[in-house]
Amino acid sequence: MSEITKIMCCKKFLPLSLLAGTLGACGANSDNPDPGEVAVFDAIGMDEGITTLGTEPFWNARIEGATLTYSTPEDLDGTLVTIERFAGNGGLGISGELYGSPLQLAITPGQCSDGMSDRIYPYTATLSLGGENLLGCAYTDTQGFSGEENP
Image (cartoon, rainbow, N blue to C red):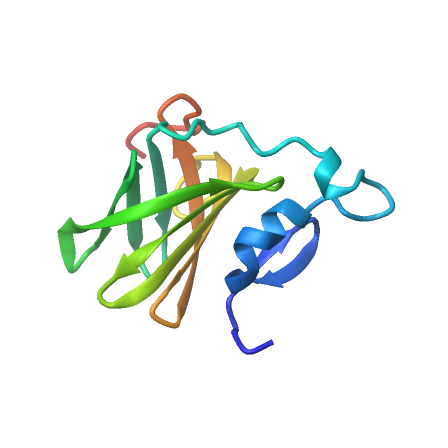
């Protein structure tokens, strides 16, 4: 594999560059039906607001419609990115360009802890940006986290 970036898909690590094709491939093993027989991921509506966050380093991405606002402690106001969303069988993919580099974000179902609070999030987030791979958690406007609002 030419890229270090990998995501967890069906308990197998796959290159993030193959995200569009592999989200559809999740489920293709002897325990699951063929990809064409598995419904496309629809747990997050295509217009639903999503918040993703990660620690060490700290980052945040707020997705609303076709726009993502990426922020860090050095850029609290954030930078706007035009994005495209696509649903596969294993989760939601988001792609765009930030600072002249490709931005790829995979949001997949699974309990996630930010490691800094007692919150539990319903989704994991894997962000590839400018050769850096960032892991985090995600929740939506209708599927929040459990735990304290302001820990």
